[in-house]
Image 1 (cartoon, rainbow, N blue to C red):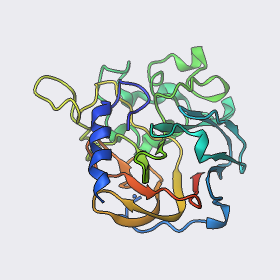
Image 2: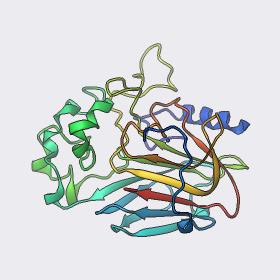
Image 3: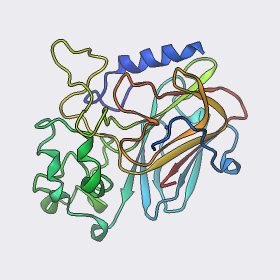
Length: 272
């Protein structure tokens, strides 16, 4: 599955993952997620905002837009790009008073591409910035002046934030669903950096972001198979950037294969 822009992960790796799955996440591996199935309607994807603030949902598929706090909206599965990737990213709609000082997110190392992004920049004391601030602009002393790092003027361009990826009918028999955060294998061990002698399908550019801001959980009313191990699950959860239910590097194995069925539906909940 191809990501939003080429600055992050090459698309070929996603295609390889999808093909590998034809044969057939938080700190606990692959336990089935049992969430409120009554909210999952056949043939739809329901987006539920359980956050205390409104969200704007950036989508490369059907238009989604604003989602009020404690609100929900449903979209027919048929409205999504069939056989292709649909990327949905939530952005918090905060007031200026609710924003941290994004200029203080200095762990990022300045202009994107100056220092490779690592998981440590998104967790611990940096988590409050990651939840609210645009990492492409933060930590450079320009947020207070430009007023576009957080709050009503925040740039919401699809290049950062929690990734929910959906490919309905990725094959004639299966939908593919996954979460991606790009965290790497540890706080200071990011994905391989692209360059000479590095597998181009398993590397990122130096400016690649960590894809996490808002906690998320997805679920389905019918069973899916998680990863090439075909572990039965009904969803996945990601409450922080290093969650093991999400892809952490391009060739990680975290995709769910969900058999196509007219009665199948999905629920995507933010701040579960």
